[in-house]
Length: 321
Image: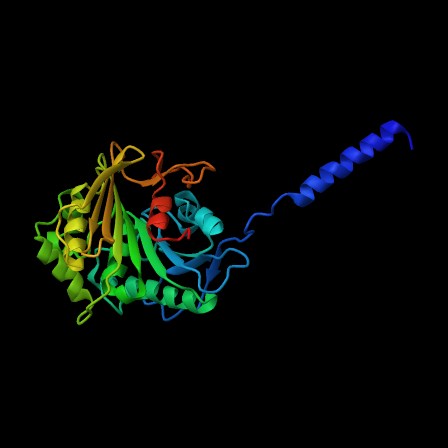
């Protein structure tokens, strides 16, 4: 064998060895549809993302898309499937159908879809039960954007025993359409309710339930003209009242340059957190990239503002631990 051929073979073997020693991504999983998850009174579709080799007992995140979106696009765009691979948890991605809502919005404003045991709320609850059974899931969290954020609030109120925490992005407080008289008044103006009245709407959704209630992390763009910032103010009123804490932030700081507020219980645990994204319109905050705090892919209603909401929620919930 000539020296040149030997050197060439050595180069090939070295390259092959490098390929073999390159770490394989934690998951080669893909989004899968699940059928037969229950009676499905809300006629929704269920998709899920489960990283390959996921151990039993890992958390479950339910992520609800916004209007005009679908499960796959939201799962990827928001960064939740990316974080599922990174941190090791599964994601349930409910999907609306046009027969239910022509804009593919979850019906957060319809009494028949936000009541425990009925409609879309019951369908999502059945998805949770199916997923926890299939993957021997641990703690469950719920989050969503816009109409999906409104439905996340519905799940926190109507099925509080199922969720450790919720994350609401450009969403609305539970019962807002009923309190305001219409969904549009809720979205654009807000509803005139005291903190106690907001809290009473949640308590009435699950009569007799005494806790624990899910904690809340909320995100809102200050330039959002679709769901006005007053809705995050009302979310704070609602969920601090449910948690039995006052509406004065215990911590006021900035994260990635944006105002961040934390409301704590008597033991010092954060029960409500808010991120006010200065200058952002209507959408899900993301920070595309491979950095430790980055996630998401920018797109329609998925906005690159150098802060990834999914990462901030997951960190607050201890998903990375």
